[in-house]
Length: 255
Image 1 (cartoon, one colour):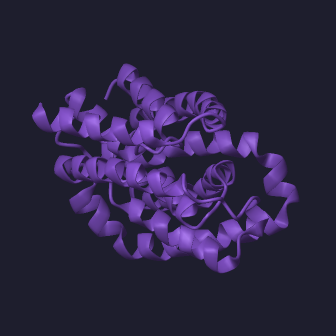
Image 2 (cartoon, rainbow, N blue to C red):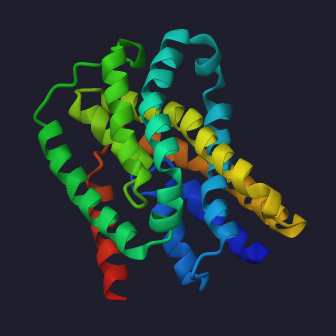
């Protein structure tokens, strides 16, 4: 991997991490487009660890909420538990057999796009009953975490699974989007930390430098992506992202 490729990965990660289009899926497809196939062990870890840059953007933008609103933090931690348990149990299977599998990614992108369109159609006919993150019950928070765990399958999209799960439970659109941002912090820190503990000792100084480049770029781009999504949802639903997922899946399947 070159510095240029690390920068491209950082841009892709920063744009896609919080949009319901699957950052992992796009990183895998980016690797294929850049000719980095089959993926090396470093690339597999890079695609996971680079997400820390985007997560740091959430920490910077939502530091006040994280420090002051203990009720919200309790619900975030409750929501994190299902993913932590399932992710730890299936870590080896996911990294060995699913991460880097084009057919799995494209199938998840396609089905996820259809799912977004269907769920949005039903959501429009309902009045959201949960206006604030602290209004979530702990059981609702855990259910959102169960939805998020579906995104362990590459191509599903962590943000899409979380947001669509929240909408299905009657959560206000802006509320579930911001909850998804906060839930990303423990989820991705745990996933990245586990992978780095298992893999980082085998990387060279050059590979660690490339990872630092990717993290830095993803952090800067993610700040803009978060602000864009918050602006977007004031005026639009997520159907356009569902259509995009379907189109890009069909495009790559044809190619």
